[in-house]
Length: 481
Image 1 (cartoon, rainbow, N blue to C red):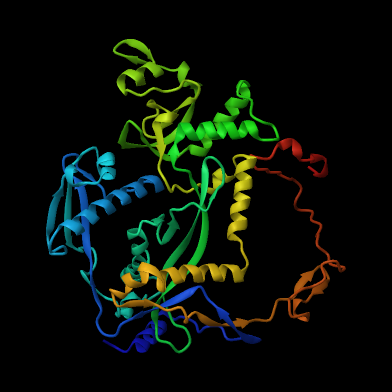
Image 2: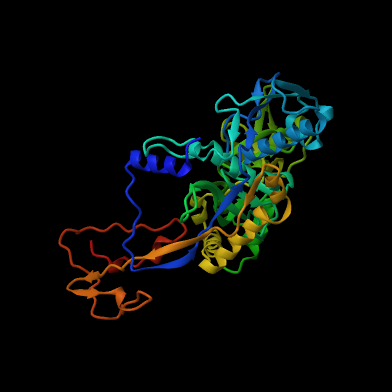
């Protein structure tokens, strides 16, 4: 194997990468949220396999296909339970061409519930899309030979998975998106529909710090994210109505049809695109599309040539008693299919998208609270990241898990040199402000600075405002048209 520094230098020369910046006023010591891995010397081999879990009768794969946070998370939990069973009960796990069937009587209650008593086929084969063997010290394989080419991510992916798996094994965290690990314990209940969870966003890079040779390193940041609360949608709606009735400003009046229509409209926008499973058929997962304008008591179905009220239909056909004072849900695929709110169970760990954070004044407040939780000072963020890295690299099961692969996460290699450049001079009309006049880079904003520049080009104005803000709150007489 060629000398690693020579490989790096040849790649830099071939890619025509410019030298790093060096025109600094001075250098200061700093900390980066980057922690390097130590791998024991020599060839440290790991072996990759393709795992397939499928229902052969329905020709349905549990490991392939897309979906949203809710459905992907559910399938990941099911696959984890099934693979754990195979690990614990099969001798010689890891041999080539391993195939077995997992019958319902060998499954956990959780799997039987969501798989509708299906028999699942487990297949294990050496990885076909990439190399079966991976040397953890083969750093050159993870380097990009040229800017227009894609680097092999195998090594980086392995180290990222290595720092997540023990938390998943312990069932204390949930994987939500690539490299994002969140605590299952909620940190705060934001309202009746939304909870906040703390987590860490991780990624692996190949870095060079000072004179140290290139090595894999974990880049991490702490996050607090909003998720839809897990639970029965009908019960969630009831709690939301009660909270809206108890609020001080403009309380909700259930007998005011117009106010209730507005409430259900916001409710439908909030839950659009959210996944839930049917309480009477957990193996069926639907994606909510919208909320009906009519209440359940006002809806009927045509069955065998006769009209049957929705309440009667679910009592006779599904053996479910439902209430009629709430609307029904349309699903995303088949909008003609309607389901009562109380027959839907929201799947856990579905992220609340940014566009839903401005639906109402309350959602805007939640968005503001989340921003405050994430926008902490550098010292606080650094300590929070260190706490997470201690959990991964030093304390608990994760460090032991990595040790089995000959890997250790170092906590003392994130010291970096930060170069300080000269600050730019800011021009305000004919007056200059020079932030270099003091160490903090401040300048007097109250001085004779010209902030406005008249223009003869712009003659029209368009005033936009968010949906949650009333149009009447703007004083348009201040704007010239």
